[in-house]
Each structure stands twice: as C-alpha cells, then as structure tokens.
Image (cartoon, rainbow, N blue to C red; front, side):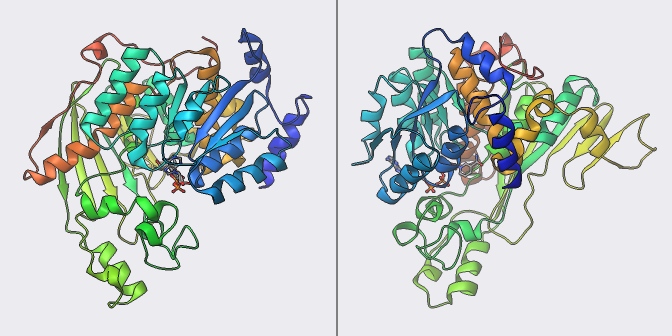
Length: 454
Ligand SMILES: NC(=O)c1ccc[n+]([C@@H]2O[C@H](COP(=O)([O-])OP(=O)(O)OC[C@H]3O[C@@H](n4cnc5c(N)ncnc54)[C@H](O)[C@@H]3O)[C@@H](O)[C@H]2O)c1
C-alpha cells in the first residue's frame, strides 16, 4: 500500500493527476485521433478488478465499459470508479452474452477479458471480430480447437490478441531474459518451469469468501472455486501451464525461430483434494464423495525444434510453498529461481552455486529500471503494472503486442495435449504449429527495449 501511495504521489508531479512517467505523455502525442485509450473490461471478478484498479491509475486510459453477470461485482467496480473520481462507464451483464453489446460500442477500442476459462475463446473471437484490440487472461484456451479458433480469428481480422501473462514481466524473469539475450548462459540447452501453488483454499471456499473457510465448489462457492475446481474433477491435465511456460518460451524464441515439436505428460495419483475435503469438511461432507480425475503432480516434457526440452510441472493440490520452479541452462551455466542461485563457468567459484542477487541486479531489465519504483505497488510484485503497460502501449499504437495470438495458442495447447498424453499411456503428442510455418521467419520481439515506441 505504501508503494501504491508513493506511485500516485510521484506520478502526480507530472501534473497529469494519477499518471505517470514521460513515456506516457510522449505516447499520447503519438496517437492521432484521441488522447486516451478507451478500454472495456469483461469480467470484473478478483482479476478483473485488479486490472481495473491499475488502469484507473493511468491518465492515458479511459474505462468506457464494464461487463459482469454478477451484480455484486458491478457494484464494487462502480465504487472503485467513483472513488477514483472517474465518469461512470456503460455497464453490461444482464446475461452471459451481454458482453456482445459491450463489443458493439464504438467507444471501446481495447478489451480485457478476465472471465472463467470457458469464456476466453468465444469472448476473444467475438472481440477480435468486433475489431477491438484484445487482451485475454491466462490460459487463453483449454482445447486445441479453441487454440485454432483464436489464431484463425486473428488471421481473418488482423486484430491483435495479447495473452496477459504477467509472469513474463516478473523482475527476475526479465533480468534472466536479459542475461539470455546477452549470452550469459551461452547456447541454451534446457529449461524447467511450472505452476507449483497450493490452491486448495482457492479451489474450495464457504461461498462467502474467495479463499477457504469451507470445502464448497461449483454453485455453492464464489470466485474461482465456482468454476475452476470442475477442471480438477473432469480433466487429468496441466490446466494452467502459462505462468511457467510463458517466460521460458520467450527465452527459447518459441514461434520466433524455434517451436514446440512434441510433448509427453505424466500424472501422479490424485489424493490432495479429497484429503483436503475430509480434513477440513469432515468425511461426511457430500464433497468427500467427489472423484477428482486430476493427478496431484503433472509433469510434461516438451521438446523444441532446437533440441532444448522444457519440463513443465503442475502441482496445485498438495501442501507446498509457492514456486514457479524456473531453471534456465545453457553451455556456460545455469540459473534456478528456487534457491535464488546461479552458476556461470569461469566466473562463479568452481562447482559452487552463487547467490543470484548481484547478477539479477546487474542485468535488471531496462523497463524495470525505468518504472520499477512505480510498478511495485501494482500487484504480484509489480508485474501486473508491466503486463498492462505492454497491453495499453501496444493497443494505443495498434502494433503487435509482445505476447501474441501464436504465444496464446501454443502455450495454452499444453492443457489438451497433456490430457491426451496422460489418457494414452503418456504417449508423445505432436505439437500443432499454430504459426503454419511462419515461426521460421518470425523475428524475436524486441524485448530489451525500455519502451514501445517502434
Ligand atoms: N495472471 C494472473 O496472475 C491471474 C490471477 C488470477 C486469475 N487469473 C485469471 O483471470 C481470470 C479470472 O479469474 P478470477 O480470479 O478473476 O475469477 P473470478 O471468478 O473471481 O472472476 C470471474 C468473473 O467473471 C464473471 N463472469 C463469468 N461469466 C461471465 C460472462 N459470461 N459475462 C460476463 N462476466 C462473466 C463472473 O461473474 C466473475 O465476476 C481467469 O482466467 C484466471 O485464470 C489470472
């Protein structure tokens, strides 16, 4: 909160009210017609309101429409706009398809979709078809058909879609990307990553609070437990691959000179969610009878055309500390996020891990150097500021975002491919080439710049 206050105070110094640093002022000059990007948000649950809070801090954004089928979330958003001293936008949500009326609004140029996963593809496709610069939360799709629908809609309309993967903007991840680009690790060989997060209190609650307090899910629960837990009932799959895979896919130039070729997945037995219900709600609770299809730890190995396999772990049903388990390994050395350690041959003491702090500082990303102080209060340690900043700056300029539809499709495809592999005795699954061969020519995004003025 302290840093949030500092952010507002510091940015007010520019005489723009809430926002911000010189780039934003310069960026406004680059726009031909309007001075503010007109944004609509579909889904103002926990994530959507976090985005709303961050967008309300920006002087270069006007919230023109909000949509949610839950009147409580609409009321809460109304309060946020009022507190920020902003004009009331148009509100939608009379039924599940009312978002289409939001998409018809001329006063919406860009759309952020932060709804449950099953809505991501239809909403994104409709949004692209309506010509709105589209940002979709993670994962973008849960089926291969859905991944293709996203790609096809983009190619048919030319309207950009950005997957809003915030971990790509984490400070250590961006510093390591900087090291990769500067050849610190030499030729890359291997990556590890994953989503390792004890979600038991996210998957179950008491219908009154978003986290824990009971073991309900589905209709009797609220927030993510209302819709997310059913994926653990129905699918034995890595249902949330992008927080881990997104950052290493960028380091490995996936869809830009490299591509995923095939993958196999393995699932452990699943005991964590049942144990949680019994231990918390008692063995007589009706949910103690629910059979969860999902294994507790799902391990996927994805090979790439450059021969740099990526091991991805999904581990969300057992007690454990949070970790995305990053490892980046190349000809010259290795970095691991767990343990905050690094080894670079010829520089680190022989055969010994070094603390990575000095390396991360030395290779701090230019964007973090420029905006780190502003960003830190924005949520998830600052990365939420950067992911939205990338979206807004790209949308204002109508240029391709750093994380595009091909990234969205190929990272999200791990979900259906892991389900197919596990269901078929861990058989390797061929990875679709969502770029239809363009990966060979596509150049890496200019990640190391400190802005988006291209
Ligand atoms: N990047 C991150 O760090 C991060 C963090 C949390 C959630 N997420 C993602 O954000 C998305 C939303 O998650 P959440 O935690 O906000 O969930 P949530 O359940 O709190 O919010 C979802 C909202 O969507 C609304 N909604 C559902 N169907 C709708 C429809 N047809 N039209 C309009 N509104 C509709 C619901 O009423 C709800 O308010 C998910 O994809 C999730 O994976 C990402």
